[in-house]
Amino acid sequence: MNKKEKLRKFNEKNVYCITAEKYSKGRDNVTVVKNMLDAGVKIIQYREKYKNFREKYEECLIIRKLTAKKDAVFIVNDHPDLCLMTDADGVHLGQDDYPLKAVREILGNDYILGVSTHSPEQYMKAVADGADYAGVGPLFETHTKDDVMAPVGLKYLKWVFKHEKIPFVAIGGIKECNVEKVVKAGAKCICLVTEITSADDIKEKIKKITEKINL
Figure 1 (cartoon, rainbow, N blue to C red):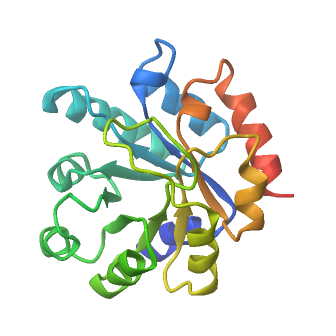
Figure 2: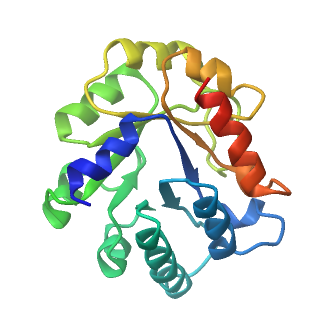
């Protein structure tokens, strides 16, 4: 796939999955990703805060091979070096991570760069800085991350939908029980973390969520 084909997945009705081994009921990230891909997920982000760099590197090498076989996009959280070393498709950056423009200088234009945004001002800055897509949230209360912030609510999501300049991914506290609200607010590509990683049956959970996204 070229970059244009990869980015198309961010602008379609898709589940965007993020790893979270701490919340995976004893399953390792690779096992969880295999389940996600078998369920038809086309965007995987590797996010791992509790392992050393060697462990992250080795896991990403395996996940890169798995995603390539399934024609899925592979995004690495935070680390442009890890992206380069494992031939991932791109990097997702938070507001306190490396500046997007600096990462773009290192990676070039062939890689996908996403940025977490929590306000209209941050979204428009991401657009101006050349982001390929934006994370929009957290929409609801979430405790997946240690440095969690207060939810921004659906009002911000509706604003992004109305003023969309680049593809966006809805994220933050989204569950099977509230995903329909997120869809009605304008989201197509929707990220769920612990709702999926902590599910007893990951494939069945993704199936149910996908059905709601496609209503």
